[in-house]
Length: 428
Image (cartoon, rainbow, N blue to C red):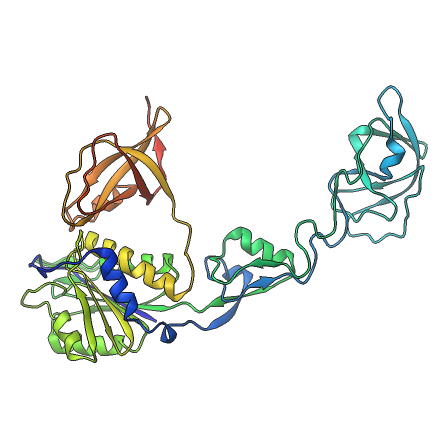
């Protein structure tokens, strides 16, 4: 289970020593005892299995199709009987019966005979091709064939799609709608999946009130835990909302101890060094190793902290909304996916030309951009590279460009964009 603790940052300074993102992630993951993070298997109905992760390989115990199957409406024939057939010189075959969907038949197609068959029906013995009804004419129990047909034409052979014993989906597959259809097609009604990590969320801050409440002077609506809840669900977790916690050291410590009953603790806020930024010190009071990393070379999100208590990973994200988003995407997402032993939901990316110069910086930066398609090319217009407290810079963007530390971008340079929304075209 994962606990997300969120709070709005007061704008104070943070740690002064920052390490690169890839080193922070490596140090963090190397300290985690993954054997204690494993998820049990549960079986769920196919209607509940989409966007879940397979915990076992799935093999088929049937062939698909389970028999030689007609791909077209027409007539089952021996292909050799159609040799030389044409519109000018048709070949006549005896009509001996009809097969409809789901019907079992004892009919056998011998040379000179034919059987009417519908799409999806089992091909009768003796037939090795199906000629489409458009290339025939039935009259007085005689079928005229106007086209020569090759062996196996318009027939899906038994096991052509799936063979008995074939591994169809491997452990760790993030199940898509087409995967669910495949599982149903081999007769499964339930799928073995990893149990979701539970993600409990609470926010801390004297100034925070619930959305829907009356907005008082010097108060703000708490938003981070709602945003984080959506991200947790998107990346395979289950959310438990623990509400808002005031800036009281003893109350927060009690809440942290409650949080540590679960698998992971994610804290948004209290990561800096202000008067009420208690989180790092509180974690140090608990079981070792405590804080592993505090201060990441990334913008937004540089005050992010990573720790472990009682084998439970802890992610401390800054309280500014965009910083929290970036920190959870950078560390929470890979942590969840690693727990579920999956590559995760496919991430949409495209290549576009940046519309402005971006100067180099010592930190990795998450550039919010708006991508449009114009005259057949994609263009990424910067929306914001700072402004960590302005959540609307994310909603006004449809993508993010990660600019590594020490790198600069020149106008019209090609960049890779991680898409947050669909891209729309504009007029020339």
